[in-house]
Amino acid sequence: MSLEVPLPPLGRCAVHPDLPAGGTCTRCGSFICADCATSVSGLGARLYCKACAERPDVNYLEALRQRYQGKRDEWAWVVGGVTLLLCVATAAALAQWGLRATRESLFTLLLLLPVPVGVAFFLGRRWARHALLFTPLVMAVAADALVPTGRFLFFACAIPAFVTGLRIHRDVRNQLFFRLPVPPGMLKLLWNERFNNPMARQAARFGFSALLMPLLAPVAVICGVVALTRVDSKATPPIGRKDQAITGLVLGLASPLLWGFFLLPWLAERLHF
Ligand SMILES: [Zn+2]
Ligand SMILES: [Zn+2]
Image (cartoon, protein in one colour):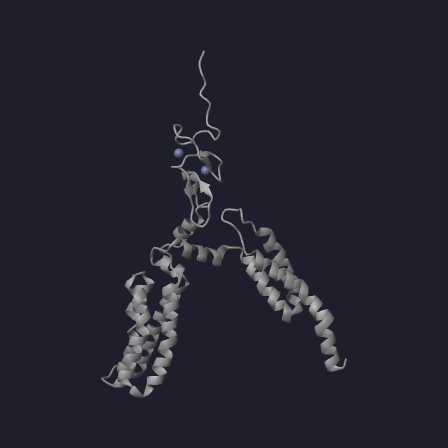
């Protein structure tokens, strides 16, 4: 006669049978011990087994990082394009006026100053990210030294270029191109912007537009309904933007009422129809 040792109520870890399980994996439901329980950034308090936590559909922020890491973003192409334009413009100017030791030809050569920075940026050299910020200011100072009468114009051009540089410098997608370590919170913002129920954002946009153009109201309603059916806070990754979907839906429904009962009668009265 053998004595069966009863298992603890939750059973044992699927990977470590000698350890008691503390819970189950949110995705596959297998028992996990304290060692195996893994939380995934962007998914709150849910716990997963190690295998599930590595899946791209669960660890969606890490999957997003791998998808974009080292891949040129829109800004890299813009900087590359502007660099090419500067080369073409300088070549055209030199073909027109030739290279003489005059201030004008020196001024033309100034257009070549950002070219090495632009090329390095396009190739993903990290120093170029910082250099890009200061290039417009250096150009303005150099241009000012050559033609002091244009000071206002040079700085008026340099300041928007600097502000654009600052935007590029802070852009998460661009930081991924440069393979910089981006924290999960920033990845989540990027994911939210690009993949979190974009239809809901469209619904809200069409809803506000429908207040001015009632013909857009059905579009806002359809987008709002579709977006609302997609909202699922328990999904992996969670799909949100419920408020924007509702905003689109409500504005889409309100617009025909607003026009039918208030704006059209008011307009008709004003225009003496
Ligand atoms: Zn699992
Ligand atoms: Zn375990």
